[in-house]
Image (cartoon, rainbow, N blue to C red; front, top):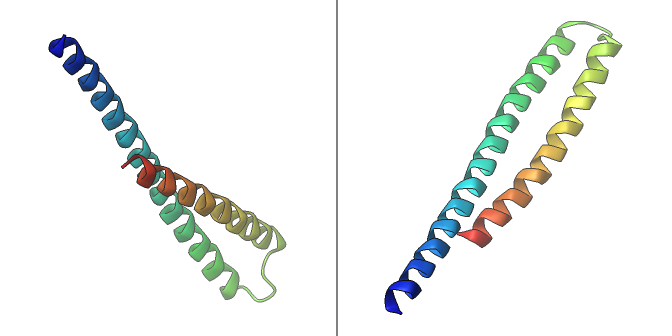
Length: 87
């Protein structure tokens, strides 16, 4: 009876660690994506500032990228909360 209870508990612990690992991976992936997107945004801003009357297409891409960054930051915030809940 004790062994059966122990095995059930170990499966629950294994599942909890798996969930925690998955949540941490999600947070780390989103952080990496944000870093990459922020770097691209900085490059686009630098390229736009060098050109007087910056290209409209470049400005549009920059605005789209900023919106994507905003959405990804919201996702990261939610993923971080989920990770903290699991942890």
